[in-house]
Length: 86
Image (tube, rainbow, N blue to C red):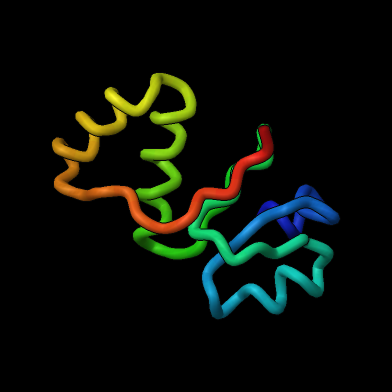
């Protein structure tokens, strides 16, 4: 949906592995990360990558200690690469 709206053209992003080619054809700069944080737009690769995205947002906004507590509540640990623009 973000790509269809033209919001990912020329921007780093990711999506489910089955849709990466289509995203690249629509102009996204597709990266091989589970989560891509380009400041105002954050994308994730697949179903469990959505959990990684949520935990990354908690980390980004409130810090790693809060994210660790959220992981315990969810019974899920973040994994994979998060690409982010500093």
